[in-house]
Image (cartoon, rainbow, N blue to C red; front, top):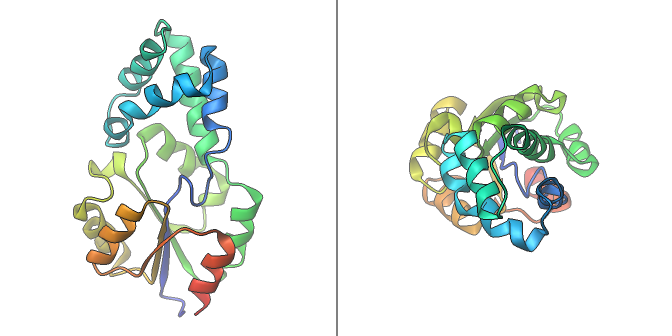
Length: 192
């Protein structure tokens, strides 16, 4: 792979696994994970598309029988953004090994999470951080891949995502896209 090539990663369940995300939020709300899960995901797409953080977290709280207290909502937003923007050691090692490779993120993510990733020191080497909340369109919509092409100056060399429908859409757009199977497999694909 030449130095001008770009490797694009999804964020959630690729660079950052979901381990502990729902548990921390459920504890904050005083409910269990099975209760929180449906409430957390029900309106997530609208939030990922740039929807109001207050509206999203109020809906989550109300769906699990809690009052939408502003202090609790602020803590939920902060916890969610911190969990999804904290890079685990395994991902950090993968990125360190990609010396000379142009990196980008393409993720369905809300504005607070996008801000947390941009503020994280691990994101400094990335040429582009592309988030659905900033664009107003989310994977697998073809428009987000076209937007990424414009920012990247052409098609990326490789794209990794955990959702098959996003990988299929990227392939239909002409990208060399792969369902995430972990850092070892990513190294193999990038190195071929």
